[in-house]
Length: 428
Ligand SMILES: Nc1nc2c(ncn2[C@@H]2O[C@H](COP(=O)(O)OP(=O)(O)OP(=O)(O)O)[C@@H](O)[C@H]2O)c(=O)[nH]1
Ligand code: SF4
Ligand SMILES: [Mg+2]
Image 1 (cartoon, helix red, strand yellow):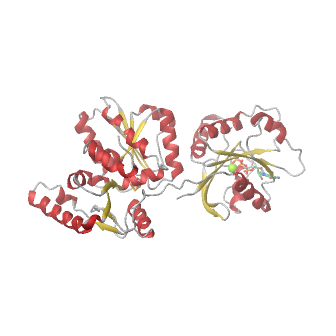
Image 2 (cartoon, rainbow, N blue to C red):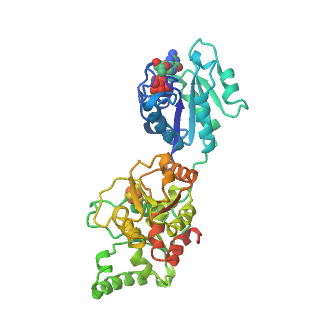
């Protein structure tokens, strides 16, 4: 999870793919003298002994013209936003560089600066050719701010120099946001996992698995419970009573002597959990809230504040529902059924336009402004950098955003919302 993302950027033919292959010590990317060889972002995941787990992006040159060039550029900048370290490659062999305004390099630097990236310049040195570093540096880095290295990238034995250079200059403290707030090892965490009929057998969903493993690893006892949502929401009073009695019995056993410290529920069960844990002495939150807080590196507050935009929605507004994966849709799917239905109930059918973005696809930067609110899932299939990039894009576009767990709790009232964010010391 705490992987460092390293992005490689620069003009076409500057040696970006050669650098990718130097880092991976392998023919990962195609290297060719034809400009524009790399057309899409090429991602590779590996373990570099001295740096730990890394994800490396080889990108298309951003100086390519035309419609296709623009498309490539957008993808390249998306990768840049998801990078922690930006390696800007400059080809020393390119005579055209000498009388250039370095707009390409300056653009990479300015976007990277704005997003707080670490910027390292890699001068691709060609054997026996005059060095142009000083001339280039005077134009793009007149204050000598950015660490640089001159290397012949096609020489694989330069690997060690390159890694040492990155290691020496990177001040990156990978976020150590804990998955859960501080908990006691002598108290129990209750995991409410309703399991939909359509859920595949043989495994838990990723957030459930991650949280269970995190707790057990830390000697914090857990109790996994399957709530029958059909019974709990039944129109037959006896069924509801029976299901509630089963729940209450386990809770009272576990909470004897105040031994229950936290209940984490699937967000979709918030309507029931909110009612059944009204006077609880233990904390309550949702899997989705735990995940988004972790993946946003402790920025749950932004998602909690964002829910206020929901109150101000009006007819004609557009809302985006974003999920980090393309999972199977079940009948009562949160993103495609439950939330849109609630929006229709609250604002009138079809009054608010709801768009969906699933998987790695997120609305284009220019389109974000059209939305009044973005409602995001826990994002467990995305990494911290992808969530950070989405948050930054949304903040820059002035769009409010919230999260499934936050919104579904808010639907049950402000007290419920405050209860689920309280474990993080938040209140709105
Ligand atoms: N002699 C020499 N040639 C190199 C070196 N680095 C790159 N080249 C050559 O420069 C050309 C472009 O290299 P690539 O790594 O494909 O460049 P790129 O930046 O990925 O190019 P695009 O994908 O087209 O944007 C290839 O023909 C390489 O063989 C080097 O250090 N020495
Ligand atoms: S990425 Fe989102 S929708 Fe997909 S499993 Fe994770 S939390 Fe659920
Ligand atoms: Mg390339």
